[in-house]
Length: 271
Image (cartoon, rainbow, N blue to C red; front, top):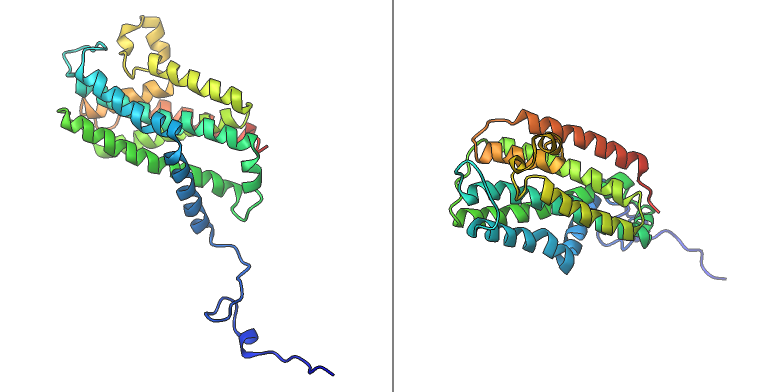
């Protein structure tokens, strides 16, 4: 008769002890999973030629073109680089937090990537947190590149850096909420068309390259409440005018953030 198996020393070892060769079935800590997801999302974005063009190349080329050549018109005797640098920084946040995220999330939803990720140990809020961290990492790359180009071209920023960070954070929150609301409500093709269309509308009407003063008084009073207008106006108030804390633009961005995030939470569908 075969001998009865007894517990060996390896079987008695606690789970995960070196040398036990036994897999730990427990999921990794949530914070580690979120960091891994954020790294994964960032690598995907930076490896995607279309997204890289939209997030990095186009803002840099627009900054160089508009600041170096008399393509657009500015007012008040302000130097071109002092006027366009804050606007292009705002546009970079728009391109990454809104357009790129909306398109990528829309197609992830179409191909059931979000559905499969939702079945992993990473909670769904953790997936969204990973996407948010990825957006922030890409924005840091954008800011370093754009600020470096602007400084080389003679930009002299002023104001409180904390005010700039608060504006960028609220702008990112507002555009991310709008992106998830859009991507979670429409088909992928419709999201692609709507995100690109709104990107162009925001650039044309949001004070990025054309001052709002060029529009009529009635139109200006409405356009100033767009999220991109609030972001660019706030950045110019701080970086160009030396304002300590532009409460008006901050209030507009805060309102957009609340509405957009609430809409995304209410209407976002995972499949």
